[in-house]
Length: 168
Length: 218
Image 1 (tube, each protein chain N blue to C red):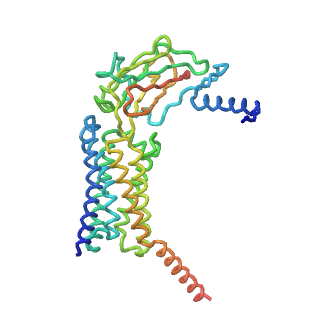
Image 2: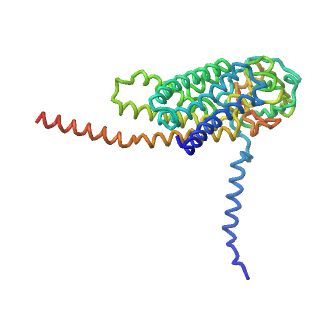
Image 3: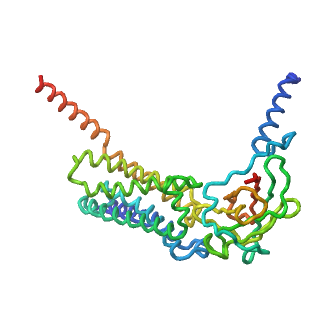
């Protein structure tokens, strides 16, 4: 039994479309020029229960859960070192509004931040964290952004959120 | 009552008790409670109790509970309705004390979580139904009943979707079962009420009245 050969052009077309869908869906488009890197908008509810100016800490409470991410500049996508990021959440050690649930850290030379905090648990219907870049508490001169990423599963022990900041 | 009737009656009451008691017990023993203060715990449980009362309401309104005379059932329907209002007030007030900005976002329909809007729509329908209870007697019975059932459906659907989308203290299985029986009970009573016939009767009566008026004017 022989198979009729598929037309080469339609195969190529399908492959291109597939690749476009894959990159589009995962948000991993790497443009030839990074000039167009758009700033991250604040998320709905991101600023809820924010306590401005939490201290920079080695870890929040007893730790065990990792909140990680990158901070880059809008436009060229350059990583931003020494940018202050504050985090808070409802965890096994406190409500969002509690002072002990808040802490901040600075990005490293590669624009990467890692904050250890107690395990985030579902609250107000969803296991979620909060992150802030607050222009009032950072000298790098970017516009304030609040994020509210959601854990894919309440059993996750880490959460990632990336910032792309634009000059204020 | 025949033996068969007695068994049937027992089974209905036992099923009702289980459908309500199991999800409340699961929620009241959830591991999440260890990380919540008492106000937040009370707020969450009030929501679970409110959902459970939504199962009792149509059964009372439709006189579907064996051994309960319809007259008494209707009186209880009013009392349970007041209890539902109280549960909703405790639910929203407790959440407000726990996290004011999250409740404000929900009430203003700008919350990041979809379940909030469903809950707030149900909240307004509960308040409207309570307000309408005060108007009873001032509206034509068929009109009143039609409006009341429409509000009841908004409450039931809004609350069920609200509950199902939430990752909270309720167990997944007992929550799904309770939501399913709430929907079935509400649907059965609405169908039994023959609201469409009511509507047609209202429409035809209004139509006749208009025709009569035209004829008098001519």
